[in-house]
Image (tube, rainbow, N blue to C red; front, side, top):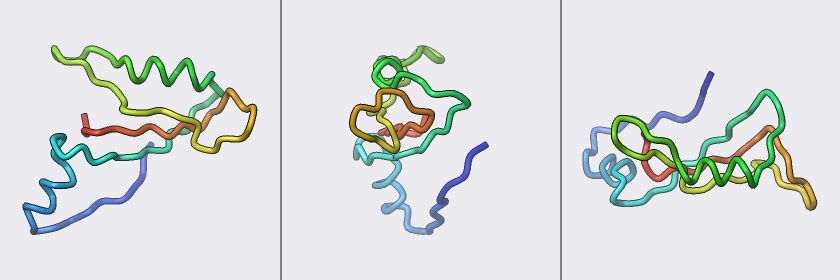
Length: 85
């Protein structure tokens, strides 16, 4: 399940600037998992990426969505992408 903000516009230049990967606009997603994971470990895997259709898809950044000092596991991650694939 997902939810979020949808922007509608008839301004093609604006949409191009916020969606095209060459502009490197960060898109943040809060991901809720069924169980807690080791944040550092999953962040390394997400930033290394996966192969899909001949290309490598990867997250720009992954971190605990609600960090606290000394906390290493979480079931809420903030995943930052630079392109929407």
